Image 1 (cartoon, rainbow, N blue to C red):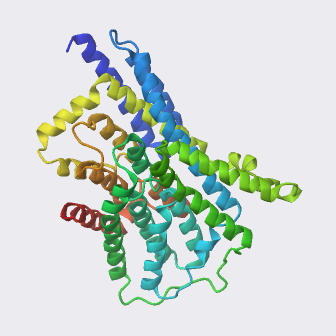
Image 2: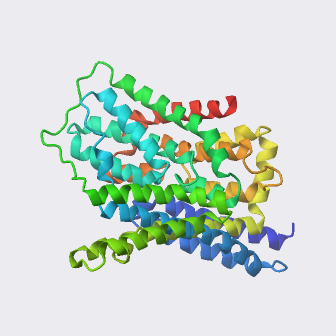
Image 3: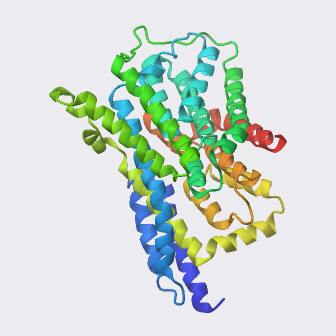
Length: 422
């Protein structure tokens, strides 16, 4: 390695570390993390283009082709979820949350969050569940425990399906995992992770009084149209992996097909009804969180720059020398996702370990999918679901560390053990 190449690599790494540090301290800086992600991507690629003797334009084109698939997939999924939400379809879920026993309600809430996040994403599931809990449970401390359980269950539920968590989606689109094997091999570890965490919270509730709910707990009305859109939306999302399995089309094409079908149905239902203009898809686009999509775009392009510079390959070689066990490497990467955002971690893994060394659906990739999906639950800042819970309930970092981190750690260990045993 020449001196010029060494300086070049250091500069790329420096811009990435600086940009990512700003992302980590987003709440302190009060600047949206998408800003730093996009700026970081441009600066990393600017330095990379200064390296002579490398087809940087060709490399960027290849990476952009892969990254755009994830972006289109996310846009389609977010729009379908927004269609369901706009028609009040998610109120269907609130019908299950009407028990008085703390322990029974905890398990119902946890399992609903687990299965809902396997179809929706974990952040949307957390927002929906925590919002409903705020309308039902009166005691704040109980409500926060339930919210923490939702975060852990939603992250575990999103890990075992290709559409439940953006990191599993990235591995699915990249060809590291496929639909039926990932669902077959990660369902039991994911449900075991959730059950272990819920068991810990149930132990905390031992001997306490029944759940205190509001005397007139608000329950959103479930309209026939809301029920229709809920089941149509769920069917549209479930159809995405089925389309890939039957046709071989890339996942984003299946998502665009599902979106266009939902779009057509809503246009036909609301055509000519003036007071329903706000329910048409063109009106819902303004409500989609585009900053989240741009954040993923910036992160993925930044990781692509590190891969093109050869930094990820060198990091993989160092890990291989430091740790002989690939299972241990995957477990450590999952634990790091409690501190470092899981999107760049998965993107880095994809860049570090190629499919020739680790074939699709190997235990290594399944471990990565599970570990980064559930490891982030150990700290409230470690996952999008945790950050969403923090924002909705104004939860303190140290409250979560004291009350919920051990439950998440127990679930993580039980899930990893289940994968290795199975």
